[in-house]
Image (cartoon, rainbow over all chains, first blue to last red; front, top):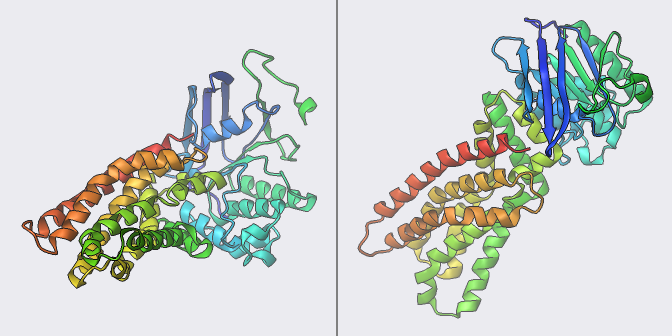
Length: 218
Length: 222
């Protein structure tokens, strides 16, 4: 993986989110540079996925600013991978076809779909329709997208969900490589991911306690 | 960007070939309407051939509606839409690619097979050619109009009913000029070109409105 021409920098200032008339979180600020990782924790419904959806440009924040500078004119949504709850795979297409489509769609193709599947340990199912794959295998195909197209910011929503221990280790290796190459990782999770020197943000409702005990959650 | 556009068209065509999709369903529905009409009206060939173009056009409009609700909903449900929104390809181009694939699997086969179906309603040679030509030019408008409704109802489960109510009124002008062009080709006081050119203009107008409106609806869907 080659290093990115311009180092990505993501600045979030006073971000607030309201869903269904209820304030989910407010006054969220952080600043991430090349190689940084951010782990977002919080109980169910604390707004972890919502925060990622806002960063991905799918939801509008109630208040706050999101600043991003990266490679040339590319905006934040065009510079990120968003691995959400839904894997974004077509069950009637094979794993390889799904990855080839994602690479074409996202631009900046990196690894060949087959090589990307090999990295996540699925070379033997490349010609199988995704409908026949297990939940964990589908998740790994979705994660192979991270390698099939080169993008500096990774938004990972519960990336270890449905993954076995070996695959979790693979994912850790991928994140380490990505950060070493100057990439950014933002992960929302309940489980410890084992990211070195990652910053933590615990999301909590604005009226309650401002900082939740991270240890108690993980 | 061109690569992303054609990758999307190719994916949708491949999906519709692999899982049947709305294309085959629409074609069968089209055939069912055309088979039933002669039984319902009786063996009056003059009557059948007089109202033939109208029946073909009504069948085309109704069969376009079949499966239209899945146009964006399927991508919304499995998260593919997030992938498209993260693409450098503008959302308008995404809509155009989806509509193109939709038309190639529904409208285009209907238009190309309509001479064959025209036999069922006793159309003569000129009538068949006229219906095929009007369907070829008019059905893209139906797909573009449908895209607006499909984008608006993308995140609504069982949005098919709302979708039909939303888009059917918009399809009426295309239906009127499609049928009148097909009838004009078989004689009468109006020259064929007059309604036919209006039909072509409608398709172009709805191409612009459909792409912009559907992209706007998708962008604001939550």
